[in-house]
Image 1 (cartoon, rainbow, N blue to C red):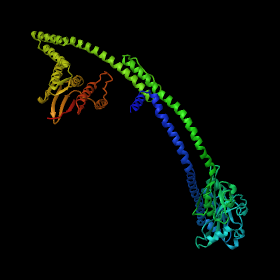
Image 2 (image 1 turned 90 degrees about the vertical axis):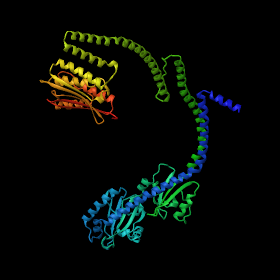
Image 3 (image 1 turned 45 degrees about the vertical axis):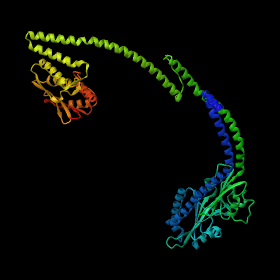
Length: 606
């Protein structure tokens, strides 16, 4: 127990670089050897089976493809059966050239569409035409073919007649002479074509496909040690990846040279499946009865399996060396920046805020270094800000103490002027000085940013009194405040800018006498503030632009004067939204009749 504790203690004090080596190297070695041993064991058991499964899949796929090709030939023959021109050509008592041309066009289009059918022969079954030239064509145009009098002696004719309209399949050699001048083995479909009206045999169609081309299209394989071929029930090779095998018997192929000729084709194929040198897969087509065969040499597979153990040992040694080197340098790449960061942090603890670390890259370590630099910079900036803020605070306190003397001096001075005016009997000047003193006192409000509505109305009253004396008898004003709203708190100078707008933009341009009315009252759960005048009003275009500017929080500028007429409105709107929730400010104006500004403030409770 003590020994185990000592090992754990030593491990904890190891550098991170050595810990990483102790973690990864043994794990990597065990993984490599276990993987190599299992790979050899599993591969030796499954590679043959996987190859067989792969061949079975390839055999099935190829069979389906060849069946599709055969179905295309059957579909082609069905079209021949239904084509009116073909029917006329086969049933005509005398051969008509226009019927041959019509059939040639039809057949040529069908050949182009199918892309696999190369040749077609149409024989008429009428006795008087047996010595005539049959209708024969290929993808190059009209051609010649074996005469019907010779064709009746072939096995293809006998099989087609026996099938009584069903398609039969086979392989023709160039030596058979059915397709004159054609030097390729062909897979052929022979079929009796009946009269569509009497359903009596009218002719015989022979459709040919190049066997070598079919082999290249469906049977070619990139591996040299894989062979594919198709054989019929009699053992003849219909097509093959090796074209030299086409037309031969299966027992002539190297895979069946030792087979018993007495056996059937299926028996020979089943016997070849268990061969110790080949992997043989085969599948019989239900449509044609042909066998698609795929053969792979086991010798190459065994050779590859024998190399697995050598490759595994070599890879294990290389991986051991590479893992030691990579782990060492990878650990160093991680621990070196961390050591650098640790040294910088120790210096930072002593008060050295000039510390910075510079790591290359944007990985986690690089982001850590970047974050550390930002943290040091921010700490330094915060310390400087705190120091500067302390100095500014002391300076502001000093200035505040000094400034407290000035308003008191100004109030005393204005009051002195007011008393002197009253002594001399100048009541108007005394009232104006007193109103100015009240405006100044209320505007300062001991440094507070809020008013009660009663204070706001008092400020507006004094302001309008001064403006009324300025404009003499140009306007009158009315102030109404609901008693229940006297103590309602609003932002300072909320109504005064609106009253100033009414004087400057509504009453001053007016030729006659005007009226300004300011009201504050309740309406359900809303507090309504109104500033209304009967001045010159705003044009419809100006009102529309002013509303748009207020929505975009932009003051409106007059081109000639440059005065921002919407600045006061925008300022009031912004302060309302900051101070209250659920406020609305509306502007109503009729040119020549006046303007009305309505502020609605939602309140809770009675």
